[in-house]
Length: 109
Length: 444
Figure (cartoon, chains in turn red, cyan):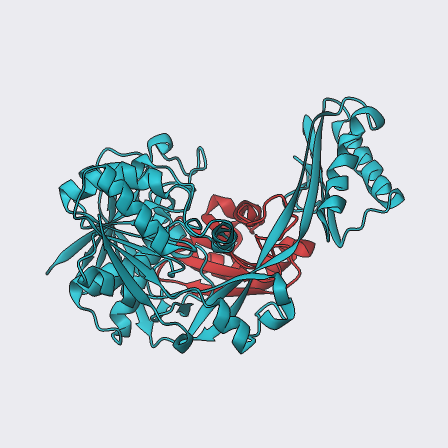
């Protein structure tokens, strides 16, 4: 199952740092997202595209996670050589992330 | 309890004009805010001002003011904007001239200045977040502007301004200023300032909360994006917020559109650093209370740090680029061959680049090969971009792509090239004591 089936996302930029939100369509899926979409998974997913670190923040009241990726924008929007200097398309890249089937969640007895 | 209605008339410098007209006409507004400054805009504006002492403000100021001033006058709507960029006083003068030409005599316009801290930054030899210092950049530095807060905006409104024009005010401060003025919020009431900052943060990108930048056909459908309505914040005296828009306008406001915008450009949601407060969005809840009416609660704040983020603009480098397209069977292979040819040519001819990229648009240009899954598209466009220390070197990069027409793989079409100077922006933190804001009033 792709992340895009249960969550939506928007990315933004500040200097060379990108943030990518992951928001559950259904608040009930937040715990599942929090369990499976970790900072390490996101770092692996982006691989060489980013040169810095990934930090995750949790917002259970909103049903959302916020990922902050440093060294993500080729030096920042104003000087990057990249086609997408803002990293605005990172949200679409993260929504391609593969999740296990919800039925197979480790929370099930 | 009193409620103030604030509309957001622009989310960036080049934004659409008509949504603000719709807001001024039908939004039953108290305030209309235009947020038009990005990180680099003020550095570029400073360069314009050096060429023309009466220039350096937003190029669309006249268009926007002509469109909304008469309606705002008629409906008693006050305007707050950072369209002053590098020259708020000249922007205010231009606004007065437009008002006079429209017969709006007596309109009171205020310019907020003090964000230009170039001298202070040079003298204090401030360190940059990206490493190095302002001093080390030497005569490459072209601007330094501190993000200023709500107080001078509130002061301008208290002085009777109908229009307030700032330079590098922090985006949320454009909204917080009117709230502080109207409700008399204390500048030490961190909870209310945090709530007001949340209002500003949610509204400042205009259409990004009303369904713009949200649609994904079949997954997240949005109607009427060509006539997208911009948002209205109904803010109660205790900081309570409902986000809505003009009935019948395009787009939609839902829990999902508000949640996406709440986290847009946020790092640690418990620490959103602003000049007046450290806002906390971590406990925010969104609730639908009617069609296109979302109630937002749970914002708060902690004491400000006393430090102001400062953007330092400097002459950085040059970028040269070239693109050309290939189609049909084997298009990707011809694109890859083209990239290899250009790579070899740039080496053979000794073009001096400090950094470069060789991408296939349609395959791997956005996120590299790993995420591209190896599916062949019908058409690809190669893109070569390189950083150089001179314009002359940058020009050579696009030229080497263009020569693929007669020297490269079969069927290349639509070659394009560019070379340009790059103004970089670095960030620093300056003590707030280096900024002395002042308000200049003038009348049409």
